[in-house]
Image (tube, rainbow, N blue to C red; front, side, top):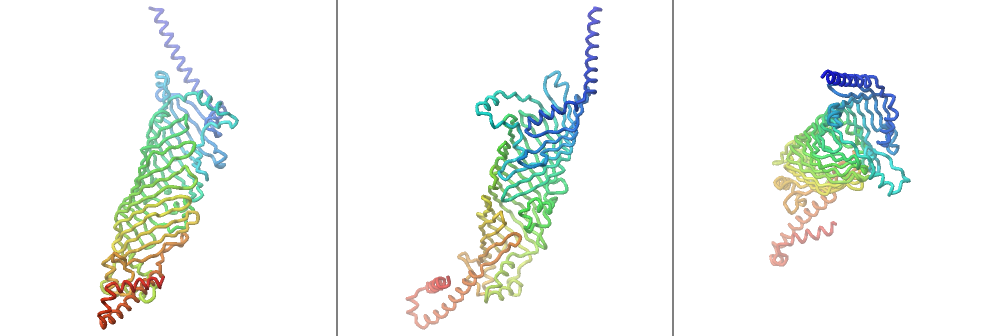
Length: 523
Protein backbone atom coordinates (compact mmCIF):
# COMPACT_ATOMS: atom_id res chain seq x y z
CA UNK A 1 0.00 0.00 0.00
CA UNK A 2 2.79 2.34 0.88
CA UNK A 3 4.40 1.75 -2.51
CA UNK A 4 1.08 2.41 -4.28
CA UNK A 5 0.61 5.57 -2.26
CA UNK A 6 4.06 6.77 -3.19
CA UNK A 7 3.39 6.03 -6.86
CA UNK A 8 0.15 8.01 -6.79
CA UNK A 9 1.82 10.89 -5.05
CA UNK A 10 4.55 10.78 -7.64
CA UNK A 11 2.05 10.87 -10.48
CA UNK A 12 0.20 13.81 -8.90
CA UNK A 13 3.49 15.62 -8.36
CA UNK A 14 4.45 14.94 -11.95
CA UNK A 15 1.15 16.34 -13.20
CA UNK A 16 1.58 19.43 -11.05
CA UNK A 17 5.12 19.87 -12.32
CA UNK A 18 3.93 19.46 -15.90
CA UNK A 19 1.13 22.01 -15.41
CA UNK A 20 3.53 24.45 -13.81
CA UNK A 21 5.99 23.80 -16.61
CA UNK A 22 3.29 24.48 -19.22
CA UNK A 23 2.35 27.69 -17.39
CA UNK A 24 5.98 28.77 -17.26
CA UNK A 25 6.58 27.75 -20.87
CA UNK A 26 3.55 29.67 -22.22
CA UNK A 27 4.18 32.64 -19.95
CA UNK A 28 7.81 32.91 -21.04
CA UNK A 29 7.29 31.75 -24.62
CA UNK A 30 8.19 34.54 -27.05
CA UNK A 31 5.82 34.12 -29.97
CA UNK A 32 7.39 37.07 -31.75
CA UNK A 33 10.44 34.92 -32.60
CA UNK A 34 8.18 32.78 -34.78
CA UNK A 35 6.24 35.57 -36.50
CA UNK A 36 8.39 35.21 -39.63
CA UNK A 37 7.41 31.59 -40.38
CA UNK A 38 3.84 32.27 -39.25
CA UNK A 39 3.36 35.25 -41.58
CA UNK A 40 5.01 33.33 -44.41
CA UNK A 41 2.52 30.48 -44.02
CA UNK A 42 -0.35 32.95 -43.75
CA UNK A 43 0.86 34.78 -46.86
CA UNK A 44 1.00 31.52 -48.81
CA UNK A 45 -2.49 30.55 -47.64
CA UNK A 46 -4.06 33.91 -48.55
CA UNK A 47 -2.04 34.67 -51.65
CA UNK A 48 -1.31 38.09 -50.13
CA UNK A 49 1.56 39.37 -48.03
CA UNK A 50 0.70 39.21 -44.31
CA UNK A 51 2.48 41.29 -41.67
CA UNK A 52 2.12 41.12 -37.86
CA UNK A 53 3.78 43.65 -35.56
CA UNK A 54 3.77 41.53 -32.38
CA UNK A 55 1.96 38.71 -30.62
CA UNK A 56 1.70 37.29 -27.10
CA UNK A 57 0.51 34.05 -25.48
CA UNK A 58 -0.79 33.67 -21.93
CA UNK A 59 -2.46 30.83 -20.01
CA UNK A 60 -5.35 30.73 -17.55
CA UNK A 61 -6.95 27.61 -16.05
CA UNK A 62 -10.34 29.30 -16.01
CA UNK A 63 -10.19 30.75 -19.53
CA UNK A 64 -7.62 28.75 -21.47
CA UNK A 65 -4.89 29.97 -23.79
CA UNK A 66 -5.13 33.67 -24.59
CA UNK A 67 -3.63 35.04 -27.78
CA UNK A 68 -3.05 38.76 -28.28
CA UNK A 69 -1.97 40.07 -31.69
CA UNK A 70 -1.16 43.71 -32.44
CA UNK A 71 -1.39 45.38 -35.86
CA UNK A 72 -2.16 42.84 -38.57
CA UNK A 73 -1.89 43.85 -42.22
CA UNK A 74 -2.96 41.90 -45.29
CA UNK A 75 -1.64 43.46 -48.49
CA UNK A 76 -3.73 44.03 -51.59
CA UNK A 77 -3.46 42.11 -54.83
CA UNK A 78 -1.48 44.32 -57.23
CA UNK A 79 -4.34 44.11 -59.74
CA UNK A 80 -6.56 46.14 -57.42
CA UNK A 81 -4.16 48.86 -56.25
CA UNK A 82 -1.48 49.69 -53.69
CA UNK A 83 -3.63 50.14 -50.58
CA UNK A 84 -3.77 47.38 -47.95
CA UNK A 85 -6.69 44.98 -48.28
CA UNK A 86 -7.10 44.51 -44.51
CA UNK A 87 -5.81 46.15 -41.34
CA UNK A 88 -6.64 45.05 -37.80
CA UNK A 89 -5.46 47.04 -34.83
CA UNK A 90 -5.77 44.21 -32.30
CA UNK A 91 -6.94 40.61 -32.11
CA UNK A 92 -7.74 38.88 -28.82
CA UNK A 93 -8.62 35.17 -28.90
CA UNK A 94 -9.06 32.45 -26.27
CA UNK A 95 -8.63 28.70 -26.91
CA UNK A 96 -10.67 26.30 -24.77
CA UNK A 97 -8.13 23.88 -23.18
CA UNK A 98 -10.80 21.47 -21.90
CA UNK A 99 -12.12 20.90 -25.44
CA UNK A 100 -8.59 20.47 -26.77
CA UNK A 101 -7.33 18.05 -24.08
CA UNK A 102 -10.38 15.95 -23.30
CA UNK A 103 -12.41 16.08 -26.54
CA UNK A 104 -9.61 16.71 -29.03
CA UNK A 105 -11.64 19.52 -30.54
CA UNK A 106 -10.52 22.98 -31.49
CA UNK A 107 -12.89 25.46 -29.85
CA UNK A 108 -12.07 29.14 -29.62
CA UNK A 109 -14.38 30.56 -27.01
CA UNK A 110 -14.02 34.15 -28.14
CA UNK A 111 -12.28 36.28 -30.73
CA UNK A 112 -12.40 40.05 -30.73
CA UNK A 113 -11.13 42.20 -33.59
CA UNK A 114 -10.69 45.89 -32.84
CA UNK A 115 -10.21 48.76 -35.30
CA UNK A 116 -10.65 46.64 -38.41
CA UNK A 117 -10.38 48.38 -41.79
CA UNK A 118 -11.11 46.47 -45.00
CA UNK A 119 -11.05 47.73 -48.59
CA UNK A 120 -13.51 45.99 -50.93
CA UNK A 121 -12.93 46.76 -54.60
CA UNK A 122 -14.96 45.73 -57.64
CA UNK A 123 -12.90 46.45 -60.73
CA UNK A 124 -13.94 47.43 -64.25
CA UNK A 125 -14.35 43.76 -65.21
CA UNK A 126 -16.60 42.94 -62.27
CA UNK A 127 -13.92 41.07 -60.27
CA UNK A 128 -13.96 41.59 -56.50
CA UNK A 129 -10.66 41.69 -54.62
CA UNK A 130 -11.98 39.68 -51.65
CA UNK A 131 -12.94 36.84 -54.00
CA UNK A 132 -9.36 36.64 -55.30
CA UNK A 133 -7.93 35.62 -51.92
CA UNK A 134 -6.32 32.19 -51.83
CA UNK A 135 -3.15 30.30 -52.74
CA UNK A 136 -1.73 31.31 -56.10
CA UNK A 137 -1.49 28.48 -58.61
CA UNK A 138 1.57 28.37 -60.87
CA UNK A 139 0.80 28.98 -64.52
CA UNK A 140 3.20 26.21 -65.60
CA UNK A 141 1.27 23.51 -63.79
CA UNK A 142 -0.56 21.18 -66.13
CA UNK A 143 -4.19 20.23 -65.75
CA UNK A 144 -3.32 16.75 -64.54
CA UNK A 145 -0.91 18.11 -61.98
CA UNK A 146 -3.56 20.50 -60.73
CA UNK A 147 -6.05 17.68 -60.37
CA UNK A 148 -3.59 15.60 -58.40
CA UNK A 149 -2.75 18.51 -56.15
CA UNK A 150 -6.41 19.17 -55.53
CA UNK A 151 -7.18 15.59 -54.66
CA UNK A 152 -4.27 15.35 -52.28
CA UNK A 153 -4.91 18.68 -50.51
CA UNK A 154 -4.88 18.26 -46.76
CA UNK A 155 -8.22 18.26 -45.00
CA UNK A 156 -8.98 21.51 -43.22
CA UNK A 157 -9.44 20.73 -39.52
CA UNK A 158 -12.90 21.33 -38.13
CA UNK A 159 -13.05 24.07 -35.54
CA UNK A 160 -15.58 26.39 -33.96
CA UNK A 161 -15.33 29.96 -32.75
CA UNK A 162 -18.09 30.48 -30.20
CA UNK A 163 -18.18 34.24 -30.60
CA UNK A 164 -16.44 36.59 -33.01
CA UNK A 165 -16.82 40.29 -32.34
CA UNK A 166 -15.71 43.14 -34.56
CA UNK A 167 -15.58 46.50 -32.81
CA UNK A 168 -15.39 49.88 -34.49
CA UNK A 169 -14.67 48.57 -37.98
CA UNK A 170 -14.58 50.35 -41.32
CA UNK A 171 -15.53 48.93 -44.73
CA UNK A 172 -14.43 51.00 -47.72
CA UNK A 173 -16.29 49.81 -50.84
CA UNK A 174 -15.18 51.02 -54.27
CA UNK A 175 -17.02 50.04 -57.45
CA UNK A 176 -15.22 50.93 -60.68
CA UNK A 177 -18.13 50.03 -62.95
CA UNK A 178 -17.79 52.20 -66.09
CA UNK A 179 -21.42 53.31 -66.16
CA UNK A 180 -21.87 54.10 -62.46
CA UNK A 181 -18.73 54.25 -60.30
CA UNK A 182 -19.20 54.65 -56.57
CA UNK A 183 -17.35 54.69 -53.30
CA UNK A 184 -19.20 54.02 -50.06
CA UNK A 185 -17.42 54.22 -46.72
CA UNK A 186 -19.21 52.27 -43.99
CA UNK A 187 -17.89 53.00 -40.52
CA UNK A 188 -18.81 52.32 -36.89
CA UNK A 189 -19.13 48.68 -37.94
CA UNK A 190 -19.93 46.29 -35.09
CA UNK A 191 -20.38 42.61 -35.88
CA UNK A 192 -21.29 39.58 -33.77
CA UNK A 193 -20.85 36.07 -35.18
CA UNK A 194 -21.90 33.05 -33.14
CA UNK A 195 -20.52 29.51 -33.58
CA UNK A 196 -18.34 30.30 -36.59
CA UNK A 197 -17.52 27.11 -38.48
CA UNK A 198 -16.19 25.96 -41.84
CA UNK A 199 -18.66 23.08 -41.97
CA UNK A 200 -21.94 24.48 -40.61
CA UNK A 201 -24.10 27.56 -41.07
CA UNK A 202 -23.60 30.32 -38.55
CA UNK A 203 -25.56 33.51 -37.78
CA UNK A 204 -24.18 37.00 -38.17
CA UNK A 205 -25.54 40.34 -36.92
CA UNK A 206 -24.14 43.67 -38.07
CA UNK A 207 -24.80 47.31 -37.38
CA UNK A 208 -23.05 50.20 -39.09
CA UNK A 209 -23.17 53.82 -40.18
CA UNK A 210 -23.82 53.82 -43.93
CA UNK A 211 -23.54 57.28 -45.51
CA UNK A 212 -24.34 58.60 -42.06
CA UNK A 213 -22.62 60.04 -39.03
CA UNK A 214 -24.44 57.63 -36.70
CA UNK A 215 -25.38 53.94 -36.84
CA UNK A 216 -28.34 53.59 -39.19
CA UNK A 217 -28.17 50.12 -40.78
CA UNK A 218 -28.91 46.80 -39.08
CA UNK A 219 -28.28 43.50 -40.86
CA UNK A 220 -28.95 39.87 -39.94
CA UNK A 221 -28.03 36.79 -41.97
CA UNK A 222 -26.74 33.23 -41.97
CA UNK A 223 -23.45 32.32 -43.65
CA UNK A 224 -22.03 29.03 -44.91
CA UNK A 225 -18.42 28.66 -46.05
CA UNK A 226 -16.84 26.13 -48.40
CA UNK A 227 -13.13 26.60 -47.69
CA UNK A 228 -11.98 24.10 -50.32
CA UNK A 229 -13.93 25.82 -53.09
CA UNK A 230 -13.12 29.25 -51.67
CA UNK A 231 -16.76 30.23 -51.74
CA UNK A 232 -19.46 31.33 -49.34
CA UNK A 233 -23.21 31.80 -49.31
CA UNK A 234 -25.15 34.45 -47.42
CA UNK A 235 -28.81 33.61 -46.83
CA UNK A 236 -31.80 34.68 -44.70
CA UNK A 237 -30.47 38.19 -45.21
CA UNK A 238 -32.52 41.08 -43.84
CA UNK A 239 -31.73 44.80 -43.68
CA UNK A 240 -33.39 47.57 -41.69
CA UNK A 241 -32.57 51.26 -41.69
CA UNK A 242 -33.78 54.65 -40.48
CA UNK A 243 -33.48 56.88 -43.55
CA UNK A 244 -33.71 60.04 -41.46
CA UNK A 245 -30.08 59.42 -40.43
CA UNK A 246 -28.78 59.53 -44.01
CA UNK A 247 -26.38 62.36 -44.77
CA UNK A 248 -27.30 63.58 -48.26
CA UNK A 249 -23.89 65.18 -48.73
CA UNK A 250 -22.29 61.78 -48.14
CA UNK A 251 -24.67 60.31 -50.75
CA UNK A 252 -23.51 62.82 -53.36
CA UNK A 253 -19.85 62.05 -52.67
CA UNK A 254 -20.48 58.29 -52.84
CA UNK A 255 -22.20 58.53 -56.23
CA UNK A 256 -20.16 61.03 -58.25
CA UNK A 257 -22.02 60.31 -61.49
CA UNK A 258 -25.28 61.36 -59.78
CA UNK A 259 -23.84 64.19 -57.71
CA UNK A 260 -25.43 66.86 -59.91
CA UNK A 261 -28.92 65.49 -59.46
CA UNK A 262 -31.35 67.62 -57.44
CA UNK A 263 -31.09 65.49 -54.31
CA UNK A 264 -33.57 66.27 -51.52
CA UNK A 265 -32.24 68.18 -48.55
CA UNK A 266 -34.05 65.98 -46.02
CA UNK A 267 -35.18 62.36 -46.15
CA UNK A 268 -37.12 60.36 -43.57
CA UNK A 269 -38.72 56.93 -43.41
CA UNK A 270 -38.16 53.30 -42.47
CA UNK A 271 -36.48 50.86 -44.86
CA UNK A 272 -36.74 47.09 -44.58
CA UNK A 273 -35.45 44.57 -47.10
CA UNK A 274 -35.09 40.83 -47.52
CA UNK A 275 -32.65 39.29 -50.01
CA UNK A 276 -32.40 35.98 -51.77
CA UNK A 277 -29.21 33.95 -51.06
CA UNK A 278 -26.02 35.60 -52.34
CA UNK A 279 -23.09 33.48 -53.50
CA UNK A 280 -19.51 34.76 -53.26
CA UNK A 281 -16.68 33.02 -55.08
CA UNK A 282 -13.50 33.72 -57.01
CA UNK A 283 -15.72 34.76 -59.92
CA UNK A 284 -17.29 37.53 -57.84
CA UNK A 285 -20.79 38.00 -56.51
CA UNK A 286 -23.84 36.27 -57.89
CA UNK A 287 -27.01 38.19 -58.65
CA UNK A 288 -28.69 40.21 -55.93
CA UNK A 289 -32.47 39.82 -55.63
CA UNK A 290 -34.08 42.03 -53.03
CA UNK A 291 -37.58 42.88 -51.87
CA UNK A 292 -37.63 46.35 -50.36
CA UNK A 293 -40.32 48.12 -48.37
CA UNK A 294 -40.27 51.82 -47.50
CA UNK A 295 -42.78 53.13 -44.97
CA UNK A 296 -43.72 56.71 -44.12
CA UNK A 297 -41.19 58.00 -46.63
CA UNK A 298 -40.84 61.77 -46.95
CA UNK A 299 -38.31 64.03 -48.60
CA UNK A 300 -38.05 67.77 -48.98
CA UNK A 301 -36.50 69.88 -51.70
CA UNK A 302 -36.75 73.67 -51.51
CA UNK A 303 -40.35 74.43 -50.45
CA UNK A 304 -41.85 71.16 -51.67
CA UNK A 305 -42.38 68.17 -49.38
CA UNK A 306 -43.40 64.75 -50.72
CA UNK A 307 -44.80 62.11 -48.38
CA UNK A 308 -45.47 58.50 -49.40
CA UNK A 309 -47.19 56.01 -47.11
CA UNK A 310 -45.63 52.83 -48.51
CA UNK A 311 -43.38 51.77 -51.37
CA UNK A 312 -42.89 48.13 -52.34
CA UNK A 313 -39.98 47.40 -54.66
CA UNK A 314 -38.30 44.38 -56.22
CA UNK A 315 -34.69 44.75 -57.35
CA UNK A 316 -32.62 42.28 -59.35
CA UNK A 317 -28.98 43.02 -60.13
CA UNK A 318 -26.43 40.88 -61.97
CA UNK A 319 -23.06 41.72 -60.40
CA UNK A 320 -21.11 39.13 -62.36
CA UNK A 321 -20.83 41.46 -65.36
CA UNK A 322 -18.71 44.62 -65.61
CA UNK A 323 -21.68 46.75 -66.66
CA UNK A 324 -24.50 47.24 -64.22
CA UNK A 325 -27.53 45.24 -65.33
CA UNK A 326 -30.83 44.23 -63.77
CA UNK A 327 -34.36 45.43 -63.16
CA UNK A 328 -36.15 47.70 -60.71
CA UNK A 329 -39.91 47.48 -60.15
CA UNK A 330 -41.82 49.55 -57.63
CA UNK A 331 -45.36 50.15 -56.39
CA UNK A 332 -46.36 53.25 -54.43
CA UNK A 333 -49.43 53.26 -52.17
CA UNK A 334 -50.83 56.72 -51.48
CA UNK A 335 -49.06 59.93 -50.66
CA UNK A 336 -49.15 63.70 -50.83
CA UNK A 337 -47.17 66.56 -52.34
CA UNK A 338 -47.39 69.59 -50.07
CA UNK A 339 -47.19 73.19 -51.28
CA UNK A 340 -47.29 72.14 -54.92
CA UNK A 341 -50.21 71.51 -57.28
CA UNK A 342 -49.26 69.37 -60.26
CA UNK A 343 -52.35 70.42 -62.21
CA UNK A 344 -51.47 74.10 -61.92
CA UNK A 345 -47.89 73.39 -63.00
CA UNK A 346 -49.15 71.37 -65.95
CA UNK A 347 -51.56 74.07 -67.12
CA UNK A 348 -48.83 76.67 -66.74
CA UNK A 349 -46.95 74.76 -69.45
CA UNK A 350 -49.70 75.81 -71.87
CA UNK A 351 -49.04 79.51 -71.39
CA UNK A 352 -46.91 79.52 -74.55
CA UNK A 353 -49.82 78.31 -76.70
CA UNK A 354 -51.38 81.18 -78.68
CA UNK A 355 -54.98 82.18 -77.92
CA UNK A 356 -55.49 79.75 -74.99
CA UNK A 357 -52.37 80.65 -72.99
CA UNK A 358 -53.61 83.89 -71.36
CA UNK A 359 -57.02 82.41 -70.59
CA UNK A 360 -55.49 79.30 -69.00
CA UNK A 361 -53.21 81.45 -66.88
CA UNK A 362 -56.27 83.09 -65.43
CA UNK A 363 -57.70 79.66 -64.70
CA UNK A 364 -54.61 78.51 -62.83
CA UNK A 365 -54.63 81.67 -60.73
CA UNK A 366 -58.14 80.83 -59.57
CA UNK A 367 -59.75 83.82 -61.27
CA UNK A 368 -62.24 81.72 -63.23
CA UNK A 369 -65.36 80.32 -61.53
CA UNK A 370 -65.45 76.68 -60.35
CA UNK A 371 -61.68 76.24 -60.84
CA UNK A 372 -60.37 76.82 -57.33
CA UNK A 373 -57.49 74.33 -56.84
CA UNK A 374 -55.76 73.53 -53.53
CA UNK A 375 -52.08 74.12 -52.99
CA UNK A 376 -51.27 70.41 -52.73
CA UNK A 377 -51.49 67.18 -54.71
CA UNK A 378 -52.88 63.87 -53.47
CA UNK A 379 -51.11 60.76 -54.79
CA UNK A 380 -53.39 57.76 -55.22
CA UNK A 381 -50.71 55.34 -56.38
CA UNK A 382 -47.86 54.72 -58.79
CA UNK A 383 -46.24 51.81 -60.62
CA UNK A 384 -42.75 51.49 -62.12
CA UNK A 385 -41.19 48.80 -64.29
CA UNK A 386 -37.64 49.47 -65.43
CA UNK A 387 -34.39 47.81 -66.48
CA UNK A 388 -30.68 48.61 -66.44
CA UNK A 389 -28.54 47.30 -69.28
CA UNK A 390 -25.59 48.43 -71.41
CA UNK A 391 -25.23 51.72 -69.60
CA UNK A 392 -28.88 52.71 -69.95
CA UNK A 393 -31.67 52.93 -67.40
CA UNK A 394 -34.89 52.24 -69.31
CA UNK A 395 -38.35 53.01 -67.97
CA UNK A 396 -40.59 50.44 -69.60
CA UNK A 397 -43.69 51.57 -67.75
CA UNK A 398 -44.43 54.37 -65.34
CA UNK A 399 -47.87 55.41 -64.17
CA UNK A 400 -48.75 57.97 -61.52
CA UNK A 401 -52.34 58.53 -60.41
CA UNK A 402 -53.12 61.76 -58.56
CA UNK A 403 -56.31 63.46 -57.45
CA UNK A 404 -56.62 65.61 -60.59
CA UNK A 405 -53.97 64.33 -62.98
CA UNK A 406 -52.55 60.98 -64.07
CA UNK A 407 -49.23 60.48 -65.83
CA UNK A 408 -47.87 57.80 -68.16
CA UNK A 409 -44.23 57.66 -69.23
CA UNK A 410 -41.64 55.57 -71.03
CA UNK A 411 -38.08 56.58 -71.69
CA UNK A 412 -34.40 56.22 -70.84
CA UNK A 413 -31.48 57.72 -68.96
CA UNK A 414 -27.95 57.26 -70.32
CA UNK A 415 -25.89 56.59 -67.22
CA UNK A 416 -22.59 57.61 -68.80
CA UNK A 417 -23.55 61.28 -69.23
CA UNK A 418 -26.92 61.31 -67.39
CA UNK A 419 -28.81 62.31 -70.55
CA UNK A 420 -32.54 62.08 -69.81
CA UNK A 421 -35.19 61.54 -72.50
CA UNK A 422 -38.62 60.51 -71.21
CA UNK A 423 -41.80 61.19 -73.23
CA UNK A 424 -44.77 61.83 -70.93
CA UNK A 425 -48.53 61.87 -71.33
CA UNK A 426 -50.56 63.80 -68.74
CA UNK A 427 -54.33 63.34 -68.43
CA UNK A 428 -56.48 65.73 -66.39
CA UNK A 429 -59.40 63.93 -64.73
CA UNK A 430 -62.81 64.18 -66.45
CA UNK A 431 -64.63 66.45 -64.03
CA UNK A 432 -61.87 69.05 -63.98
CA UNK A 433 -61.46 68.72 -67.77
CA UNK A 434 -65.15 69.50 -68.17
CA UNK A 435 -64.84 72.59 -65.96
CA UNK A 436 -61.78 73.80 -67.82
CA UNK A 437 -63.43 73.42 -71.22
CA UNK A 438 -66.53 75.18 -69.92
CA UNK A 439 -64.34 78.14 -68.95
CA UNK A 440 -61.79 77.85 -71.79
CA UNK A 441 -63.66 76.60 -74.84
CA UNK A 442 -60.53 76.77 -76.99
CA UNK A 443 -58.94 73.66 -75.39
CA UNK A 444 -61.76 71.33 -76.34
CA UNK A 445 -59.46 69.86 -78.97
CA UNK A 446 -57.22 68.43 -76.23
CA UNK A 447 -59.89 65.95 -75.10
CA UNK A 448 -59.01 62.30 -75.63
CA UNK A 449 -61.45 59.45 -76.23
CA UNK A 450 -62.03 59.10 -72.47
CA UNK A 451 -63.14 62.70 -72.04
CA UNK A 452 -59.92 63.85 -70.34
CA UNK A 453 -57.68 66.70 -71.41
CA UNK A 454 -54.46 65.06 -72.58
CA UNK A 455 -51.18 66.97 -72.74
CA UNK A 456 -48.10 65.42 -74.29
CA UNK A 457 -44.63 66.49 -73.28
CA UNK A 458 -41.13 65.36 -72.50
CA UNK A 459 -38.78 65.24 -69.52
CA UNK A 460 -35.37 65.89 -71.01
CA UNK A 461 -31.95 67.37 -70.45
CA UNK A 462 -28.64 66.47 -68.85
CA UNK A 463 -28.62 66.18 -65.07
CA UNK A 464 -28.97 68.52 -63.21
CA UNK A 465 -30.58 70.64 -65.96
CA UNK A 466 -33.60 68.42 -66.46
CA UNK A 467 -37.16 69.66 -66.82
CA UNK A 468 -40.59 68.99 -68.28
CA UNK A 469 -41.78 70.82 -71.38
CA UNK A 470 -45.15 70.42 -73.02
CA UNK A 471 -45.32 69.66 -76.74
CA UNK A 472 -46.57 73.12 -77.67
CA UNK A 473 -46.70 72.36 -81.40
CA UNK A 474 -48.92 69.31 -80.85
CA UNK A 475 -51.17 71.26 -78.49
CA UNK A 476 -51.41 74.25 -80.86
CA UNK A 477 -52.29 71.94 -83.74
CA UNK A 478 -55.07 70.24 -81.75
CA UNK A 479 -56.43 73.59 -80.56
CA UNK A 480 -56.32 75.06 -84.08
CA UNK A 481 -57.99 71.97 -85.53
CA UNK A 482 -60.74 72.13 -82.92
CA UNK A 483 -61.29 75.84 -83.48
CA UNK A 484 -61.40 75.44 -87.27
CA UNK A 485 -63.68 72.42 -87.01
CA UNK A 486 -66.10 74.29 -84.76
CA UNK A 487 -66.05 77.36 -87.02
CA UNK A 488 -66.64 75.32 -90.18
CA UNK A 489 -69.25 73.29 -88.34
CA UNK A 490 -71.17 76.43 -87.45
CA UNK A 491 -71.06 77.58 -91.07
CA UNK A 492 -72.10 74.12 -92.24
CA UNK A 493 -75.03 74.15 -89.81
CA UNK A 494 -76.21 77.45 -91.31
CA UNK A 495 -75.95 76.06 -94.84
CA UNK A 496 -77.81 72.87 -93.87
CA UNK A 497 -80.48 74.97 -92.13
CA UNK A 498 -81.12 76.70 -95.43
CA UNK A 499 -80.72 73.48 -97.46
CA UNK A 500 -82.13 70.50 -95.45
CA UNK A 501 -81.57 68.12 -98.38
CA UNK A 502 -77.80 68.75 -98.14
CA UNK A 503 -77.88 67.70 -94.50
CA UNK A 504 -79.43 64.37 -95.43
CA UNK A 505 -76.63 63.82 -97.97
CA UNK A 506 -73.75 64.72 -95.59
CA UNK A 507 -75.15 62.89 -92.54
CA UNK A 508 -74.21 63.29 -88.87
CA UNK A 509 -70.53 62.53 -89.53
CA UNK A 510 -69.86 65.71 -91.44
CA UNK A 511 -67.96 67.40 -88.58
CA UNK A 512 -65.77 64.35 -88.02
CA UNK A 513 -64.96 64.30 -91.72
CA UNK A 514 -63.97 67.96 -91.59
CA UNK A 515 -61.82 67.27 -88.52
CA UNK A 516 -60.05 64.43 -90.31
CA UNK A 517 -59.33 66.62 -93.31
CA UNK A 518 -57.93 69.38 -91.10
CA UNK A 519 -55.70 66.91 -89.28
CA UNK A 520 -54.30 65.73 -92.61
CA UNK A 521 -53.62 69.32 -93.68
CA UNK A 522 -51.97 70.34 -90.39
CA UNK A 523 -49.66 67.33 -90.11
